[in-house]
Length: 331
View 1 (spheres, rainbow, N blue to C red):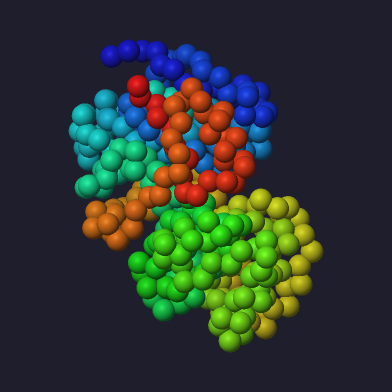
View 2: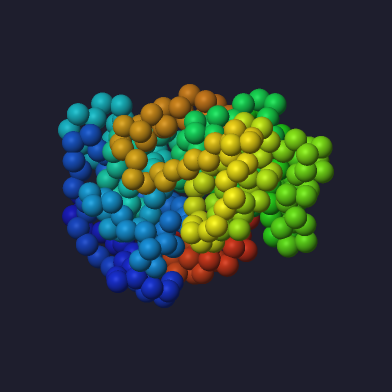
């Protein structure tokens, strides 16, 4: 087996143009890890933040970008008994996905769902791990509740819409165009609100007879925080997973007491291997059957060759995409 591989280097960081092809050693396979020959990799917002120098990887993680892949297992670390060499898998990486090979803790690796391609499988880990832990574990969404997700046409948004609908919730979302609204309705949203021409607080109040929604998944922050609190009903939950607007804002917190609200949030990458292993187990049990029966499906917008990753980042930053942006790594 080769000892050297191609990867995409972002150097000291900056605009998308800093991303260049480089060569380096194939990563070591530590105890409990598997080495994957990467076929496809996903592009995610945290990648953009890392490239810009705003989201450094954990100390023990690869400095190469890329948080999700699909491919073939080519080597097993000591103690790994749940996979075999030659098996096709997808994985949530701690980094290193923009490369020909990546080493991943075996607990973060999942089989390719039956009936899905390797391209579709690579589009799953980051979004599905994120949505499952934040919407269903932290957010405690249950059948019959009203759920609002901002950025409905993003990879996270479309995943949240499909999963929430599949588990019996009524889904609201915010979008920036009619095309994106239609994509979200097709994915399972009952109400798609165009934030450029509509006030989501007013629309939700009107639709719910001022009762509000039970849960909000927000990646915007800033001015949305106060408006989210207004849109929640009694005992509502707000889960924050990113800040496209500033995180430092002035907020009137009175409604947290008067409506008994819960405001929480999380980031996925720094969580322990044990945490991620548990999420993977839950996904395999509760979500993989939905993928295999075609109740839900990843929505892929565009695929770039690895060498064109800078173009993929430009597209991600434009927010024009509907669904996942992917990289083809293997020729």
